[in-house]
Image (cartoon, rainbow, N blue to C red; front, side, top):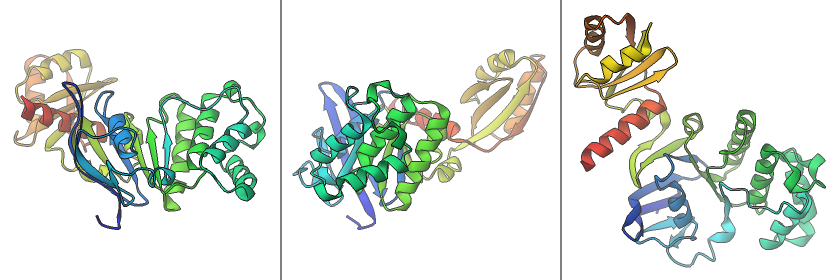
Length: 313
């Protein structure tokens, strides 16, 4: 494995009976990068993360994580990893400070340095005023910052985050991502799963998972140039009527309504896509205008999962 990679997986597979949760996954995660897993619930994101940190044994395939083989002896690996789950898992009947003390004990953080490290985290994650507050009385954003503080207390080389912002407000999500960028800049590798498109766009690189299969992998900007689709934006007086007309066209792969606008995906093999759309709308007396648009990450996701399901069929 290259020293530039924090994680390298080949053929990683996990089956639960007849269900294939992760199917033959290859993965290369560069060090000091934020690498995203984008996909809906049930796409295999959480299962993959649990295999990579040794909580689940793969049914097939292997991974090398920070130089340690998985499956294998994960006792060497676990102290070098921070893990933050989707569900808040700290102690609500203990104070912020007591939770941090407990985590320091779990990781055998050197006793002479604990107080300094805890104070540093309280300041960095804006929790100093809450240090004596019972965790159960805190807001969602405060709990999230505490969970991140606990995950990084022992200065892990690799931080695994499983849907970390699913239960917080937009401002807390933005603040959380600012903290992630600071960690990456200091050398921490971060693997984060999400189903939010705007979060996935913040990642240095990302993999799109669909039903346990990786259907796309790369930098968000690169993926947007590789959809294999024309993207046409349509503004219509009656977008519902326009959507009905366009969805019936054999050339159209997907139609999504965004307020009064539609985003229409057509394969690049279709010549003059605007002409196809404008002609169909005029023929059905739907007043609208159309223009070609650049692909966004949602378009990438739709195109990638569509191609994957076509292959499976």
